[in-house]
Image: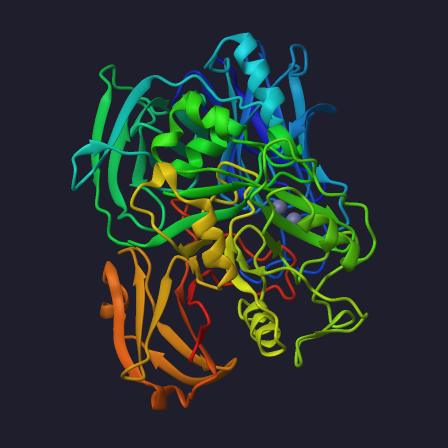
Length: 620
Ligand SMILES: [Zn+2]
Ligand SMILES: [Zn+2]
């Protein structure tokens, strides 16, 4: 039994206290508090206090007998830069760069801890301001061995990091079934500490059926079994959520884990709340660490997570590589739930372009070309390619922003350097790299349509991870037959996209239908019970003509949240015009479907939002 002392020194106000042994005799809490740390000014996000506690976290603690402690765990939140964790000057690792509130574990090399004073230091060398919360530091006697040494090594290689978690006792088994057919269904289980809101250690490892991260287990067959922390002396309460992305309901249950010997069992039944016949759910922007060396996701985990979010048409878009998901899809049985399309993110110095479909054996397009005309010529020369999406057009990559005012006049929709945009689609919402002003890219799209470009609206996730950027969170609904998701006709989907028949969904789905005989337009806003539409804006030729406030109760209804039929007069519209509707409402910050703040923010204010952007309907 160790007695120890704790002090925060240097930059943190000195606080010296003595804790008894942790209630759980395998763990020792050395600092229960979460600290607000900011490495550099100014404040990154306005929801953090104006003043941080310190620029780095340094915790000095006394240990009488360090023997046996081999794992350090902590919690952190809103970590964007690379923060190094060192213990007595030995590097333990880096905090995962993730906006979520997470529990993380680090192995302590033998001989690192000493009797007497020990020092934990968490700091970043980055000059970019990063407001983070970090703390709740504990020492543990041993880490859990979830898989064999060779499997752990193979996973670490494919996803670029090792999960190290404490040993936990109580087993929890979860199942999910489709409520209407009573059959097992792929899903996302989210496990959150009911008191702190943290995504907690999940005592299981990814397999051919599970994609596991702290607080999250995507399951391909609707079953997951894992261990959770909690003992009689230190019981813990968890909120467990079960969902399947945008179209399904969200079920939740609270459990207390107090070291039970018997497994705990929870069974969920998911209602398909948002019916989308004739609309293919597509995420046309997906990555893996395994092939992109960025993010944290293996190919297997990507496929399980995509199925768990209900994506019917995932497009593989590794950077400048052609990765066909097909063999792995068949091997693990994801082929029951979707049709995959080989594509590529052609990653040039003059913008990133997602391209598909790609014929087997085709060589990736050259990504080092320096003019758009050559880039687009090269892209469309790739065998099979018919779709070219302008990705994240307002973001800076390699010093270049395709839609920057130096390159693009957003009033007239014209490019200023003599280049012609030959992309036939563009991302309006990239949920992994959001904009501070969510309407900016929508306005860009309107002005491109007005200047004669033919461009389909796209929603995508750009997910490189299992959970940080949730796959399919922003997605594209494309008008095409989706009655058999195992054999979606990709040519039909592509034809539909080329005709502009797509909708951008980010927690909401907005559809328009033009009835030419009666000169009326049907407008619908759809969404699950867990999102709300509050405002719908109607646009004619890119100009807002009307704003509709949706009453709170109606906006929360599962399925059709709003439906109305308008005459063309209501839109001030006439033949030859194009019309569009954009629905929006409050977004989700909680860990069961967290939305990420803007990737390259213009200002420190951020409030999560949901949005559904209709296709642009041309009135003939
Ligand atoms: Zn990109
Ligand atoms: Zn990307």
